[in-house]
View 1 (cartoon, rainbow, N blue to C red):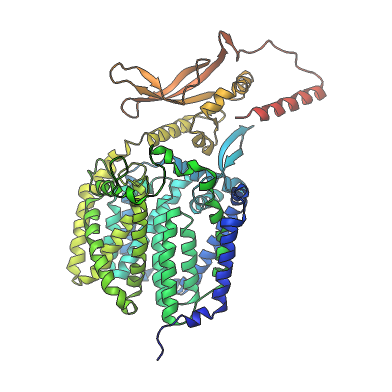
View 2: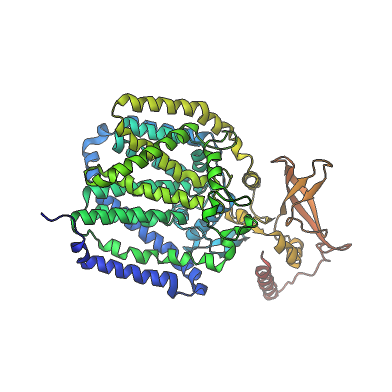
Length: 630
């Protein structure tokens, strides 16, 4: 009897056609299109590529799961595990009720919402940087392509399409994804070790304050977790079924996963390994026309990566002075003056709950479980064909999780205890939970799972809930506090017919408020004078931050926030959101040039009585108005 072989796979013409389409797509995406055209193409085709991939993914899910769905319909509600639904629902509620909804990691989340705005209004991929209220309608008239991938803003734009544009739709999407994620965790636990193991997985994540922080935010971390776990479970399904529908669902899940975060492309490696392993075992290739076309839907992703060549600042190396490269082996345990990411990781996983949104129980059990999982993988590698599909998928995906963690440790800004970077530890938390669930079958006595569940619930009540309720770890990130403060100011205004001057202008534009930066306000003073003279806006508000000297109490305006002495401001709202700072919004009262007031109304002019002259004057005014818009 012949053993497993790749010969039939290599003889399959569809495999070679897929390889050809992939090669052509790679050449076009990475080399053939000049940099000058790359981002323009992303702007025009990005939305449609993601839409096509998403539709094909949903179609593939329907094809592979319609048998189970038909069984549910035939059995009715009596066949459902309502206790597990209750556990997932309770776990999700614990995560979302203690944190306030808001943009937690300001630049990421506002950029994603801004991109969803352009996807919704114009089906283009742009983060709007200029927009204004034109006679009651908000119009976006300028923007630029952001570095972040497109799947999350695409899903957010679908919510906008269904319910109307609202920045808060980002929070609605993440609440939905929270319950989906916990449902997938429960499903994974059941596949590993039964019903109680599923509940254990849900409880482990329900007690993680970091997950609560992201569940109530506007970022893409929940979607990243959902797609990683969904892809792993679909890999297990393909291993079990080895048919074309499950193969297509797995491939498109992996394709969309790479469009959530750049580093999630690492998980393509275990997906490819699973597919090749199954093909080798079967002695034949499983290929579908949908998958053959998939590389064409990834061209925009390759074009999107050009942004790192076009804009050197995209790597944000300027945030860590003295560092010159984004990745280095030395960053894991570096010499003095360089990052020591492993030490920072330990500082996060086992830091004080008041300082870090961690879970001692998850960190301790997960660290131990990963060690045992590595030993288990070494034992199982030679006997994979005899292992359950979920165990085989876990073996392959563990290499992906390990590579993702290593990449973070070699990243110049990979400090897990940093307020901005903590979220990057979530895939490692997922690996910890999977490791715990994967080693449970080695302890077949049901009391083991029940005891662990009791310990985890105790940890949730003793640490998780109090930590989430206090959320002291949020108070050190001033940008997030200021964003929430400004959003409240926007909500308090009866109308949005005002102009905001703020270096973070995207926040206001995403909320359909006309905005410009401080630098633009300084350099375009005549335009502001024109607006104030003509009462174009009901008000012009200026956002600024002041630093307080602890010795003298003197307040100094933050660099970049000062409009200069010619701009006369009247404070409207001020608050100390953090020690030694004052956050302030002021009204622009007038603009001067020395002692003369430039914004003083001019003497009355005679209004033309002739309708033709009136229309001519109106058209001239509108033309001048559009030129001066911020």
